[in-house]
View 1 (cartoon, rainbow, N blue to C red):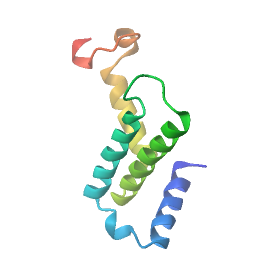
View 2: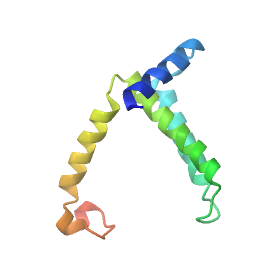
View 3: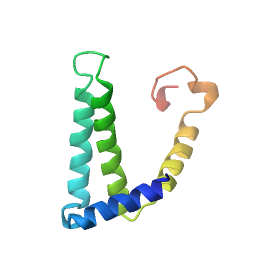
Length: 106
């Protein structure tokens, strides 16, 4: 399954329920943040977590991200690849391998 196929499935899912009017960029951004917090909650008391909980929360985050890209008319694969290229420039291998410092501190 491709990202585009997933976006089509998500569009159909929302359309069947007439939810498109609720999927404003603002609401979707809020939902991404809320679901990301729920994903973080899986690790609240340490690194151990229940795999099913993590999988479900991660799926929620990814779903809302794809829905937002769709709502904004953005191709998810394109914007991810664009950002990856920007990050490659900011974090060249020879200076960043094995280091976690921010790019301006390398």
